[in-house]
Each structure stands twice: as C-alpha cells, then as structure tokens.
Length: 212
Image 1 (cartoon, helix red, strand yellow):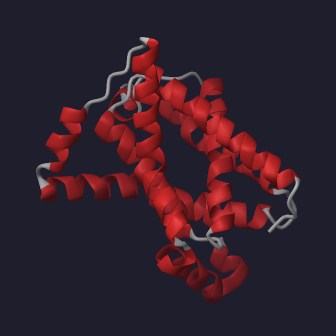
Image 2: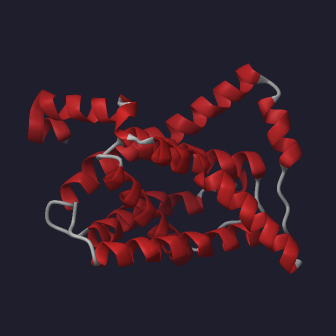
C-alpha cells in the first residue's frame, strides 16, 4: 500500500524509520525501554499493599534469560509475531495517514478500532490467551484495553519524530514483560488504570497544544 502511494521513496521512508536510532532522545529511549517493566513492577507492589493477587513469575523470567540462545529465539518470535509487522502497519502506514486529516486523539481511536478488529478473531482460537495474554477477555474489554494503549503509542510516535523503531521496541517490551513476568489479572488491571491515567494526561496536553 505504501508503494502504491509513494513508490520506492515511501518504502525507503518506512525502512529508515524502523532503523534510525537518532530519532529518540535519551529520555525517550528510557521511557520506551522501561515503561512496561517499571509499570508492571509498580502495579505488583500496589497489589501487594492492597492484598490482591500480586503474582509475578520472577523465577520464570530468570529461567528464560538464563539460556541466551533460547532467549534470543524467543525474543525473535515475539518480534515477528506482532510488534514488527503490526507497527509498520498501524503506526507506519495507518496512523501516518490518519494524522493528515484527524487530530492525534481521533487518529488514535481509529487505529485502536482497526487494531481491535485485527485481534478479535484470536479470541476464538482455543488456548490463545492462555498462551500469550493470560485470562481470556471479552471483545468489548479488549477494545477498552487498547484505547489508552493506542493513545500512548501515538504520543511516543509523535515525540520521536515518527520513529517506527520506538513503537516497535515499545510493543516488544510490552509483550516481553507479559511473557516473562506473567502478571496476575489484578496486576494487569492496576497497570491498565495507570495507562488510562497517563493517556488522559496526554490527551489533555494535546488539547492545549497545536498538533505536531
């Protein structure tokens, strides 16, 4: 689709934005790499204080990382099954074009709906959520969970000069955190409230700031 609209120049732009690390400042590198691990640990600490189920599979994470070659294969699998192709499509192509005629919030909501519809059939695959994402979620709960996430991705995308590398890594770290730590549903729920609060703050700032 990018080639049909922009030929080789469009493909080169997509590739370069996947590879160029200079689009991220040190602060944005830190946020992209630490957001999901840090927020998950913070959510687990709150779950402990509140007396909720706060399970994190720290032993499972250490066992995974104790075998470097197997861990690299696992990391490559996570990258290829979702973050790499999805971010080239969702942010690199779809969001890029939606931002030409929609506000960041409007574009984020439309991407969230497309992203949700893409994942929707997976709920009907037996064992999918148990293997990748914990407890199965109903379709409307899935959409609700993706809305703040899509806003955060747009926020990162706009603040890293349209970096696909940033959103790919952000996606990888989100998936990897879930796969390594296997947070309980209570921890995931607390983390979602944090994401929603941060997304609301971002939307408020968008409202008072000219569109980039």
